[in-house]
Amino acid sequence: MKLRQEAVRAQMRLPWRFAFVIGPAWRHIALMRKFAFPYPLLLLAIWTGMLLSGDYVVLDTSIRQIRAGGFDTTVGEIFKSEMGHGLVSRRGVEIGYRYTVNGMDYTGRRYRYDDRNGAFDYSAVTNALRRGSRQTVHYQAANPADSVLAPGLVGCDLLLALFALPLTIVTCAIWIGVIRSWRDGRGQARAGGVRILQYEGETRVRLADFSALAAGFFGLAAAAFAAAMLVVFAVGFKPSLGLMSAVMILVAGAGVAAFLWTAQRHFSGCYDLRSHEASQTLLVPPAGGRKELLLVPRREIVAVAMHRRVFNSPSGQYFSYVPALDRVAPGSEAQSLDLVDWGWKEGKARAFGGWLSRELGVPFKGMDED
Image (cartoon, rainbow, N blue to C red; front, side, top):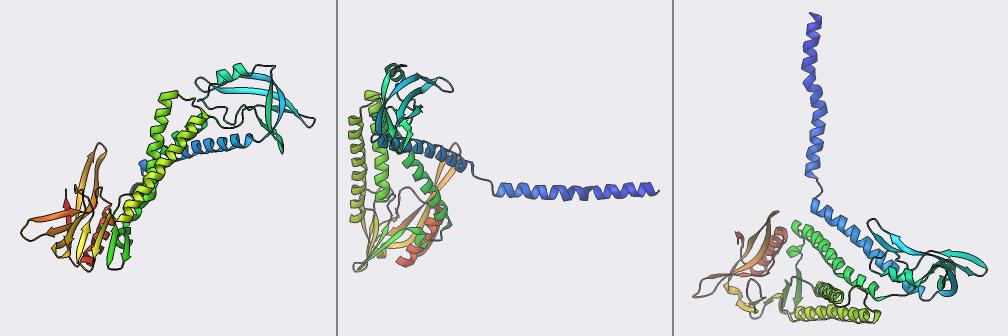
């Protein structure tokens, strides 16, 4: 009888033991789901790490190549000269040479600081640097073991930098967009973080999609991408240093031109919502299909609204929110004037719409869907 009672008690205790084990496990799983790291952001972080590593290699080797142009020189003898070995095919060059500085013997194994760069014709290098031949060695006076056979930049160095430039700019822009989206989505900044400029008798609200600086960088990226493609199609991966120097100057000029053009339009108020106190009018910027600035009496603005736009894609639906002015002119139908083209996060659009409605003394309507 006692054994039976103990067995019954054990069976009754069993679910409680499972509860003590499974309960924390489920709580842990729930926390993991709640705080799961977004996979697109993880992929962006991985891509950024790879890109920055490549940028560092290009920048570091280019700087060292330039510095090597001022090294001291001596004569060395080549004892090894062959193509390098990559994971799939032969890549780069494996070089060896002996030289003497101040009575000390040294062994060098570097042709350039980027010996594994697959863009160079290293078969021509190995043919030119035969075993037993004597070649000029460039070495650092403070550290004679630091030496190269080919100092200075070549056209391919600048071509690699040209390829890296648009990728780096676009990646930085994506990160800035992610950070701003997170910040604007919280809607805590005044007017949603939109820049407001106060002048005597006039208030300007900066609604431009891009700042002048952003436009300059995007212009630089677009020019760099186009120039890199043209150079590769025209002369391949071995352009001359003179050609690439000219191309880099033109690309930089395109970026500066984009910056100055956008800055001039910002200064002229082309992208601003302008409120004139004396005339009680609003100058509404082009958006929502409008190509020109629109002058509207403030008395015709009856409300500030917010429209939601839905974008369908294979990965799901995405939303953007467009602040707008509801206008009713005498003798005409009601009209909705979009203030931006692309739309914002809901928090930013709602915060800005609330601020604007208070400034104009009109109600802030609910959300309409486009």
